[in-house]
Image 1 (spheres, one colour):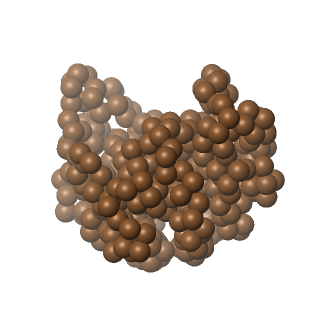
Image 2 (cartoon, one colour):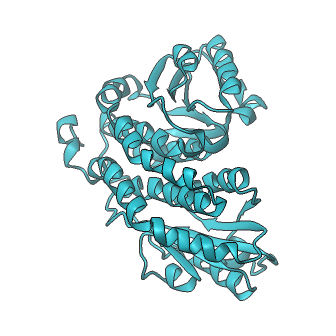
Image 3 (cartoon, helix red, strand yellow):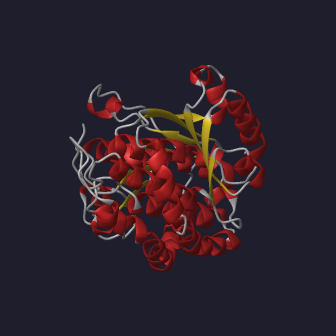
Length: 353
């Protein structure tokens, strides 16, 4: 068990708090290499993106699905790696950029997707924390997220770095230098989100007996619904179910009863009106609504509210918006009497085929 006073000694605490520095370094060191990759890809006949990933990296891939389709008008599909490693029936790809995302670069099924994509004549890209890994070596291009050793089993800094790398690549591919320039605000926005820590540490005590909840988001932040729910599952053993806020209305809302916890990740943007309407529906049913947002109206309708920095663009808002969720999961783990660095039955690298 980790007492609150000892939580600062954990790897998870340290890595969550490293994120502003890690992201600042990534943007400074990798800006030019990512531009060169984008310039080379622009000379290829790329019509869409095909991305393979697992776990937290798969959640980053979900962000990419919205990002590249919206900003670059490139349809983006997430691979089913079992088609490659179990069924041995890989789909035929044409004019795709095949991307493998893996913190370790050792995920065998992700590697197989990249290898087969390359064998079919498609350009391939690895996004990894290990530039000498099998994945990085197999791909035509590689982006090193350079987060340093991530010792905590629960990924935090590698996730935000993957999101940042994807945002930078999308910006460079768009040819809009203003987008790349706007990303420079991200490390400070993450730093501001970390300032919610004391408030979050106090609030989690209310939820130490929670055993189930729903986590909702939409659009660019849909990926964060999955990432937050994953952190709650692996650190606190809560049955946390992620949904698109719209999908939640198509049946799952029936689970709501008085006091049922619903977490909303809802930075202000084009999806705000729908999320605000959903918040009203949840409140009418007596839900315990915990929101992570910078939308004042939505925050005012919530049972508990964590206010994000106000000045952020929706397309990169998932990067600072996940930070309060990381802190909440860490402190709730300790409040429940668990050790955030030692989630049961898990290890840092999971090799799947």
